[in-house]
Length: 125
Image: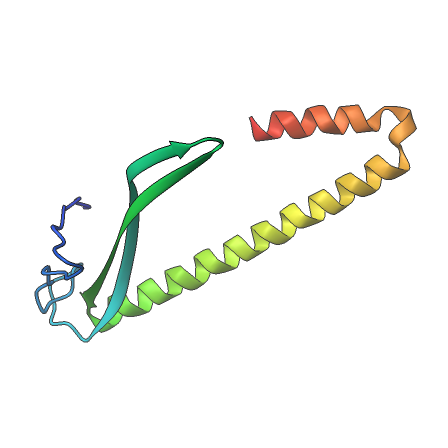
């Protein structure tokens, strides 16, 4: 179950604190992991000639989220899995780009370039 909460932030201080129990199962906390979130919003814009001056206000929130030993292990394992999958996906995308550019440069005159270009556009739609 997930819930969205709004945290009022006054002069950069965070007044929200989790209770001393695991957020998943309610057992006593055995450790915490930091949850970091940031947000920027535009507060003003002024145009002078060709240039625009834009003012932003940014907020950074850092919370210590309590977990029991079991859920800390599961969370760290999930983070490792996500990082590994992201790295594999990046390597696959890099390989596809490499192959694409090899095919385009070798078989440009045979019309493969346009076929691969159309295929690439369809994949990203």
